[in-house]
Structures are given as structure tokens and as C-alpha cells.
Length: 400
Image 1 (tube, rainbow, N blue to C red):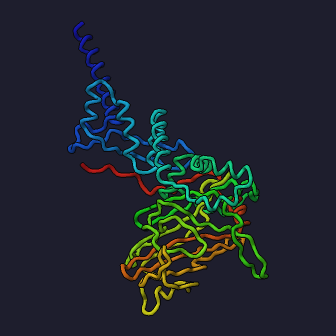
Image 2 (tube, helix red, strand yellow):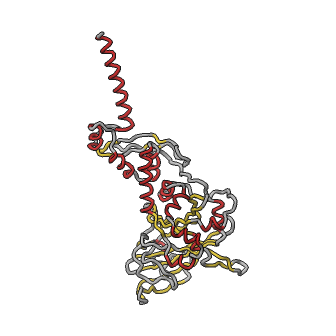
Image 3 (cartoon, one colour):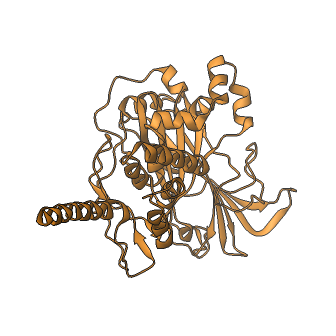
């Protein structure tokens, strides 16, 4: 009788030991870590979505006292601990995988993804742009709607929208196009404008409704005929540049901040990246140009590197009061970077540059112009669903 009793107790003890090890492996982690930072979540998150991400292990450093208090109270996690988990992750990649683990975590991660997206993406068009082109009811409805929510819908969700800002998506233009996009789809499309600094990632993202910029200018083709084109310049008080203290080119009203402000000794590349979002078109990059401040330092008798395109205009800068500012020059490059799409549509980046030789600082604003007919072609060739870039390796456990 006693032997059966001890056998039963041993079986129960072994069962509890196995259960404790399983929970310790997947929920509590190495509780006897050598440092006060332990991992409480370690789980392979497999491909639950259509993003194409490989398996990935997430390690979350949480204060040991909080974990042990939750265990001592009879609860593996409390709601406060769960709510804190999404805030510890850095990228949309990690948040999407954590959300795959349970319905509750998915709700928490979704809310965190939306919050970060709304904080990092700014509406970047001014009232002076849309006032003259808000005649149609459809356009008025678009401008009064939640553009960020519409962008997330087009992109495939808040996680996909934020992942694009982190550079985790393959947004290149596919080689095979679809049926040409319609005019109605073009008027409902959005443009994402990213300013990315080499080594630091995305510093600013703006969202612009495409319809308000259509037919704002014109190119002249080889036959001398006028071709309608879209002329876009973002406006935002959240640009990474400094305050706009100089007068801009005549007839251009801008917000009081430069898009870029940097030392003329800065050799890093500042990228301007433009992506299209629309009906049946997730984020697709359509144009990209780089700007290196170091190349615009003084080079002998020329204010810019001779290997750069010739500026269309070099004049002494004037302040907001119209007074000339000695030592500061304003340069305009009407064709800083020009290219043609695979369908032959012309696009141009226009650079407005201020070089302050007194402080060795340069300020820059970039505009973008493209033939109107290019948008329908880009929508036709755009991506149908978001696709993640391949990850080279899993994240390694941090050493204690």
C-alpha cells in the first residue's frame, strides 16, 4: 500500500516537474539568470501571415522582480506586464511576431503599431495646395478623411505601414505589370515621402494625397508640346531641418523649416524616397535620390563640387525681410536628378539649396515633378501585397 502511495506521489511530482520546465522554458525563462535582466518570452514565431518572414526568436528583457512577483502571486503574467511587452520591441517585425502568439497580445501589438505609425507619419501638404483644387465632392471627402488610416488600409495594415518606414519591406517595382490603373484610382492614391539618413534610418515621413498635385505644371516634349505633369513639394513643421530663416524662390510658400540641415563636412547620404499607395497597390517605391552635404562645400572658385550638375541659379540669399545675407548663397538645380520610367515617362527632382559659409552649414529642399500619365502605369505595376525582405539570421540571445 505504501509502495503504491509513493509511486503515485513520484508520478505526480514528475508531472509537475515537466510542466514547470515547460512553463519556465516558454513563459518565465531562465529565472536564475546571472544578471537582473532575464528573458521571460522565448518562442519561435512561425509564418502566420503572408509576409513571408522566416522563423524568428524574440527576447524581451524584463526586470526580474516584476516576473518573480507575478509568479509568487499565482499569476504567470498580469495585464500590466502584458501591456508593457509591445513597448519594449523596436520594429514592426518584432511586434507582428509577438502579436501572433495570442489574441490578447495581437490586440496590444496592433494598438502599439497604430500609435507608432501616427507618431512617425505626418500629413505633409499645405492648405495653399488644396484650396484651388477641392472642387469635386470625391476630393473633398478624401481630404477630410483619416489619411493615415487610408494609408494603412492600402499598405496591408498598420504593421506593414510601419515596417516600410523601418526598411523591412521589399518595395521595389515588380517587373510584370497588371492592367493599367484608372483615373479614379489615381485620384484616390497616396504618396509616402521618406527622408532617410545613412546610418540613422528614417528621420521623417510625410503622407500626401496625390490628387491635389496633379496637373500643377508641365514638361515640354521633344516636339515642343506641353505635357501635363505633377509637381509635389511636401510641407511640414516636423522636418529634420532647422528653421527656415531665408526667403524661398519667388512664388513658393513653404513651412518655416528646411527639409534638411547639415554641416558641409557631413559625408553621409541623405535619401529622399518616394513610394506610392493606392487601391490594389501596396507600398511601391517609385523614385529615390541621394544628397551628400559634403559635396556642396566650397571647391575652389565654385560653391559646389564640379562633378555635380550645373545649378540653374546662384544668387545671394535674402532673409524674410528681403535683405541680402552676406556669406549665404541660394542655388537652384532645376534638374538635380532626372530619369525616365520603363514606359518612358519623365521625372525630375528639383533641388533648392542654401550654403552658409559663415557656419559651414547647408540647407536643402527637394521637389518632385513627373508626367501625370506615369501614375496609372505605376499603379498597374505596383505590388499587390506587402513582402518582407529576407532576414539573414535569427537574433542571438544577449549574454548576461
